[in-house]
Image (tube, rainbow, N blue to C red):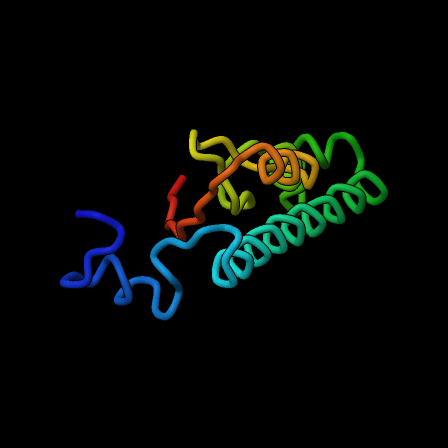
Amino acid sequence: MTFDEEDTSVAGKARWGELPTAAPVDSDDGQDLLERGWEATKEEFERNLDRVKEAIDELSDEEIMRDEDLARHAFHQVGAYDGPTIFLYTEHGTGIRHRGQLDRLLEESEELWIVPADVHF
């Protein structure tokens, strides 16, 4: 099965609705997908970073060690290289973790495509 098959319930429009199955990054659809992916990554990072700061301010070392309020989970998510809090990846499957990395990729690549995907960890 390929990501753009139309005769299935798990790919194409049946899976992604009106999202394009792939788009050049420099197209309107591509820019929209890129911005949505980057904003989602940034929002998840900031949400987890706020949880980390709160845990450091309000919990004892022992409470953090016991993962009180899922503090250690938030620490892990802030440092994640991939997974459910990283929404953009390179062609090699490397998570794009910060804006400088994304900007460098955009500047150094002549032709980039963006493809919506459903990744499970």
